[in-house]
Length: 242
Image (cartoon, rainbow, N blue to C red; front, side, top):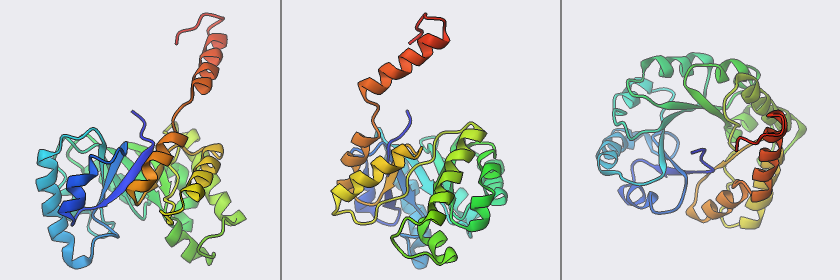
């Protein structure tokens, strides 16, 4: 299943981990990185191992590791219940390292957060096991000197490169970045619709309130399914295979 909603869950919170699978997200991104203070990194890893052992939810489980502690994090990712790994501050080198080093069958999402990696995103997308790309807007905006909320032409160009690179590499469409104002569901809806039109599929999120909006917008409508059937039928010489 291609996930529509990816809910970030801090790995050092047993309460949030326990509740996460009941919230309706297609996928969970259990976070070892930004949402976990440095002093809690070891606790987060231990809690994750305990949680995943008993996990029986339907949501995919992804883990965002720390770019500066890849080996320490991968050492705790042994469960076959893990669907994928999110590599932050992605470069060809660190994504390739994770792909070569991880000992379980998983997919990889590259979280691209720098100008250099934006310009190299096609090579990142072509690394073995990479399933889809994401963009880390906060770090990228800071590097480029962009304001916190504007969708400037520069940022739009970066987003477009992710879409083009994904198609060229033959991987899934990139997912939209999280919408930070979780109370503004109307704004979230408008943002998701725009990203969908721009070639993204699905979105990360930081609050359970956002899940339903994201799932609804990135669900495939009956009209869209029929259009796909018509295209396949035409390519098949009039004989539909759907």
